[in-house]
Length: 263
View 1: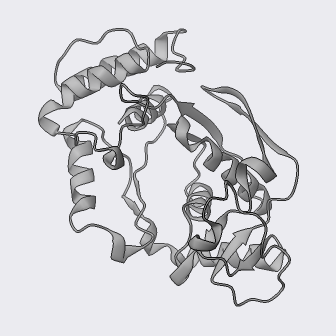
View 2 (view 1 turned 90 degrees about the vertical axis):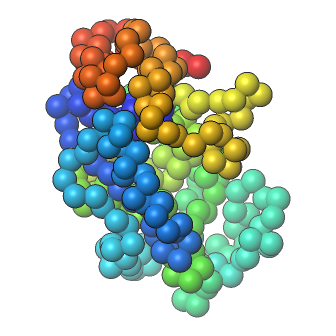
């Protein structure tokens, strides 16, 4: 919820649009009713969005077009490695990098050497090494399921996204997205990474770490905690929409709004 609220405030403070995109690239693995729960939770928290909800499962034709461009340009290669083959490797070790056939289990982007750099709106100057931090990442996985990286880069370009605000845990993903944007000659996007919420023992709060699920009945209290986490001035408990409206004004007017390093 930190990234959701932070990105909403950022968009509204700049009079921009805030879009909702559903990552359902692998429909058989989508839990029944999960998408409706997400949308109801956003509405209950007062987080209104602009335009129709974007479902990635309906956009495979665009991802396939992008993959074809990458294949034609030699930016990707077929890979036969399984998860077991790669177990324990911090990044892809380049096993299939020099293959020239077209029958791999998956497709990987050839990142090459050098560093990828960007001026992060909230985390400051960021720099990642392509070989050791990113590795040759997937653009299409097994059973022809497109990757998070390729799908998001294509969506951002198609829908004219100018700013992406998300959690600091996705920093490496941003590096992958920037090199993909360059390969596909897409317009650059500005990125801002917010400090993630951690448990007392320093673990990211999520379903995987058995964090409590979000409850609409506790929306106001949750928003207050999120704003505190982001270092915002205190906002009194009220209806979620009222609290968010106040927070937008504070975000817009305060020169001290700078989530860099807030924990």
